[in-house]
Length: 92
Image 1 (tube, helix red, strand yellow):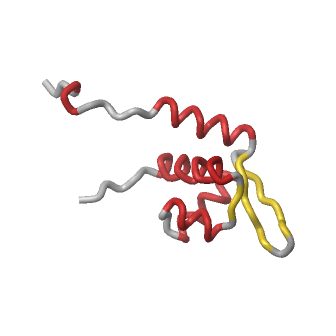
Image 2 (image 1 turned 90 degrees about the horizontal axis):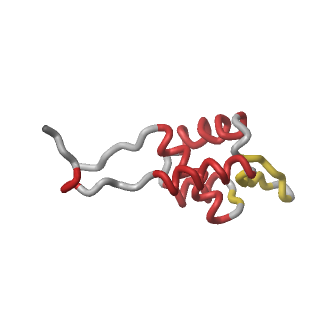
């Protein structure tokens, strides 16, 4: 059974992929993140409005890249999201 990622996790995944590859078009982001196109288009608009990514025109192609703010957010979540080993989880 595959777990579904939350919106926040998907946003962070998009930021991480852009951070890793410097810039990309929508198709490239979709291939790198496996995010569905409908959500990706919504996410790109949201991330751009938040100042986390920016749109650039290279010839006739639109490419997206992270802003300094977007890089900080991606780095923060990368360094603060570590899975807790199952042995350490106390459910009682």
